[in-house]
Image (spheres, rainbow, N blue to C red):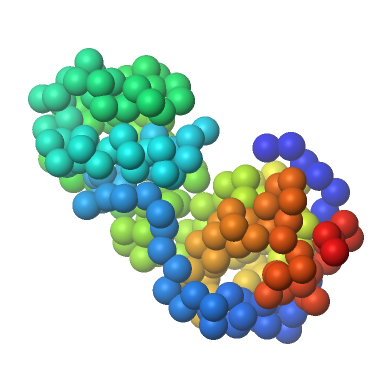
Amino acid sequence: MPFKAMARQLDYHTIREIFTRFQAADPEPKGELEHVNAYTLVVAVALSAQATDVGVNRATRELFKIADTPQKMLDLGEAGLIDHIKTIGLYRNKAKNVIKLSKILVEEYGGEVPNSRAALQALPGVGRKTANVVLNMWWHYPAQAVDTHIFRVGNRSGICPGKDVVAVERAIEDNIPVDFQQHAHHWLILHGRYHCKARKPMCPTCIIRDLCQFEDKTQ
């Protein structure tokens, strides 16, 4: 994730106003990856690396009807899994990881998904971002999953600037008021995905335009 020049860190009152507006516009933001339990959420997020949520949902909709537990995924096998996810980028490597993590979940966790970041990150194909998404979306822990959208919004706006994803994650935890922490990463992701776009940010209609530090606002 390339580093771009950071805006200055916004102050407490400005950040509170930004998230008050986000909350008013979308009180209960949701992740867009379809899942039915903690396991399918882990798989969906792992598959979403370098892929769109729409593309992953299209591939997993039928997959999760027949393989919604680690054991069922092992029974399906790597070849069967590939048949379902071959439209997703890097599908062969992702299929290997899903089978490996499913085996670990069966053998070491009784088929259940562990709910610590360290245990999740120890699974093949599961990085810090994936672990944080699962902790946040399934267990409602205020973990902050920083992706390209959050990194861009955080550095453009000054909400949570940082030179890398860990620094941005820390800036979210340190600077965003606690009452907004649960949904913070969803508000930032959705804002980056649909408004603060990489190439053509929609500044004229942005609800935080007057508070954002981005110097190159579009007219």
